[in-house]
Figure 1 (tube, rainbow, N blue to C red):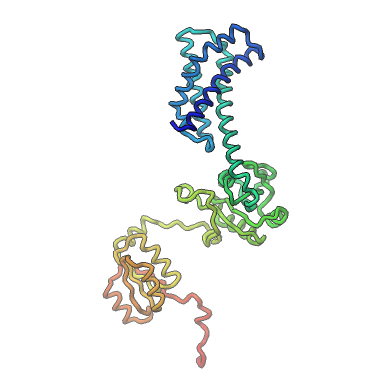
Figure 2 (tube, rainbow, N blue to C red; figure 1 turned 60 degrees about the vertical axis):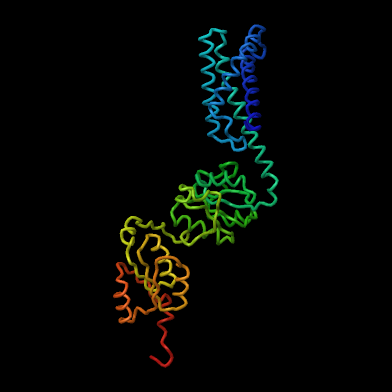
Length: 371
């Protein structure tokens, strides 16, 4: 057994004895009659091993006190309840003693308080000793959002050496002035500029993964307009899959600012369309064409054909896809003969046409000497 588990077991032995004797003490208004005091002490050799056996079977010594949680409290409650019932059943069967009923009620209540309270106090002390000394190096930050995601984020950041959350912002008036994990909701999101100035904050974390894209965009734009460095939490899909933890805040990405909800692809339909097929992408070296190629390759095409008129762009995309089932072709989509030859050679099942000029006004300018 690990030394820490032995210490935890010895602690619980003491807690059982204290709770048992304290139950008698409270039952008799702090003055236990001699007969009942003798009974309490005599019963301890029966009460102690029963409780410890149940605690061991209940897995109370597999956890680490520093990470005690509600799950550990549930295990304590169930173990203490089971042990108390077993003690009462044993007394009834053996008729060893007639223990006052109030003792049998007070004892498990006191024991739960001692066992869970000590674990909680140890966790608080440990976290303060580990992270309390880093407050001077932590960056003050505002969290925008006061929902479940924000609550989870606050619990994680409480152990972070990098961040110190100084307040929450939310548009729900019912939450103003309330606290989540000891952090106060200071006001509405559109007050971010004035609140950040008064608290001398330079960073904000948008913690609203379940809100619409438009709502998140508004919060990010208000924070950015206030001169803050804006971060956000991972998307719900990444949190649920376990790919990221909520404490892994990241920089704002393009999809966070689209002003619309993210479009989910029909994965099954795309597999049917692209898997084991020959796919031709025109303009494959451009910004749009290259991203199309990156997405298409995920669906297992038999052959991915890159058509590009820029030598450098074609070389770059070829290097990126080295080792993949791809073919590179120089050509201009305006050259009918070249396109006929490409189609005759590769016989594509699917064509993605991404060859286009993006800077239309620039390309529409008349050439010198032409009208």
